[in-house]
Image 1 (cartoon, rainbow, N blue to C red):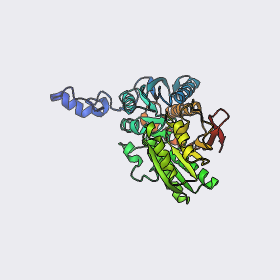
Image 2: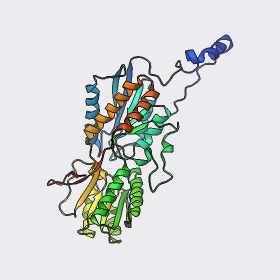
Image 3: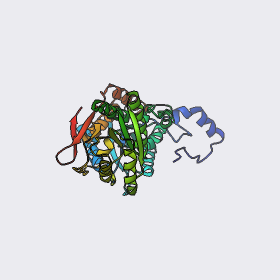
Image 4: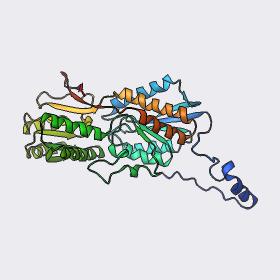
Length: 370
């Protein structure tokens, strides 16, 4: 969406001279505001972009509860402003974690709002790659409760050309995340493989930005640790491809299987197929496998573990809103000062650790330790 102002009239004669002489003071010719980064009035808006359908809907509901609770704890105010909260849907009713069209629409809505002071989003699996260039171009703070996409803040190992510069058209950092990066997950996966003595591993990843970038990071970190990927398969969401994928993974005779992708209707059939081909071979997965809260692991497949953030979704939402309100308390109506305050506050915040999860007696993932 092009947010540049449209020229509605052309000033001539004395009026044109007056505008030219006093534009810096009066805002004449620039939409009536000499400082578009400063909120006018006593109300500012915080937007929250969250999935309402699909695998992350339940997690999003917890995050939203945390955001609302943090705002309530502050009495709905910060920096001398009344904070208006607006929730926006990041999904349609189709079976996908987030919808790029809706995410872009949400970011543009916030960017076009002169009362917007911050944008909380996106939730997960790389959706921030769509919204961040839009909010950055508008000079708006963006805080993600849990999107770990590494390249949002630093070059992703294994993908040297996928650096953060593409997300910041203004060349200024405007983004803060709560929780660990996907690189932290990659490091924890490799650490788990090394501790188990699983030198050779098979790699399974999905075709989305989350799975592809994470796969590159796992391979990079594994090779540095002296581990070797012996087979690799991409799952494109077609259930009828699962038997062939499982056979491909088994061809390298791996000591372990690493699964990097978001849980969906093919997750359980994939686990069963892999166990048929590689009985007794353990699997370790990224946090995406825990996306479905109703996912109940079958008793047949071999031992499986997953890595993920220690922070609960509700707490992540609470911290995202709290950091935002603290930044507004420092920066007031000035968006630029709010961004600077948020970046400074984030640097003081200790990183959230990545911990190990294992299935409990009900076949659900539960925290197992560090």
